[in-house]
Image (cartoon, rainbow, N blue to C red; front, side):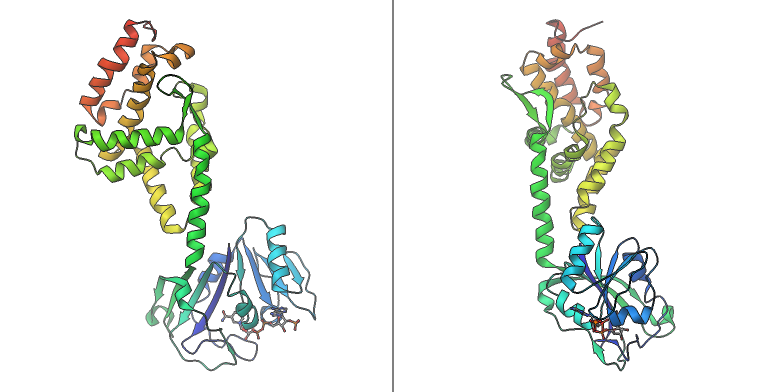
Length: 359
Ligand SMILES: NC(=O)c1ccc[n+]([C@@H]2O[C@H](COP(=O)([O-])OP(=O)(O)OC[C@H]3O[C@@H](n4cnc5c(N)ncnc54)[C@H](OP(=O)(O)O)[C@@H]3O)[C@@H](O)[C@H]2O)c1
């Protein structure tokens, strides 16, 4: 992520005589929080004001007249070289353009996000933050800090996210989840031509929920339940499918899926990431009526397909009735009626035919 971080006043002042012309309690807190562990890029004069590399960050100075080199400190000749160097040497780290005026102006068209501290004051200065087209960004108030808290001026921490950047990351996510179609499951499609994949499984359960919601033990929000089902297996893009009866793989399943969720949802803008992650965590918690019903669907859809294929995958894997009952022991929590139906129509006939071992 390439961002820009700045503090300016009502008259757009960022500096005066090579210095920041204010001292406001807590004003630099967000700069510290965001840039720690990441890369800051600044012009020579801004660096000279600070006079040393910032701790716990990599600093890249842009200058054609001086060379500053130390641990965590590099000098390059242009903004482009700074960004290329940051991407090459510190892959995965966020890059924050940190002033002054020339760098801000040049970076304005490249940055995805601007973290702006807007100080509610008019202060004299010789260096201004450049004008930009507010329509290109969505602006969100992150926090207001009052006069009482600072003892001087109040300020707002604002986040300006470029509208196209949001869409870029959403479409990037849509492309990434295409990989779910490659995650194979153990269940055969009807007719046993091949096994289904995770995306097909999610689609099938969504349609089932649309028509079976009335059988839920408690009233459910259908859209929420379907949303949960559509996304609940996305983590398997990185964590892989864990076969319901593979006891060894199930031991590491939680850790693998949590790491996968961190990776997957970091691709999304914050509010979307929180929304999808919240749904996934609710499904995993298995407590809400929607989560219980989603689990019922997750149990019954493969039972139905297995039964439709004369228990083919149960037979191939030598599965016993006791394993199926254990795997589905909470199925009725979402719907007693559907569990009874599944037991009578999908499980029992396969025990009678010998497709499920009844030890
Ligand atoms: N309020 C804030 O958030 C904030 C943040 C940062 C800075 N500031 C203030 O801003 C003032 C400094 O800003 P400034 O605009 O005067 O200076 P600056 O951008 O910090 O430094 C200017 C120098 O950096 C190099 N440089 C900058 N842009 C370049 C580019 N695109 N390509 C190549 N070299 C480039 C050049 O160095 P060489 O001459 O060595 O080639 C140039 O002379 C200070 O008052 C400082 O306190 C405020």
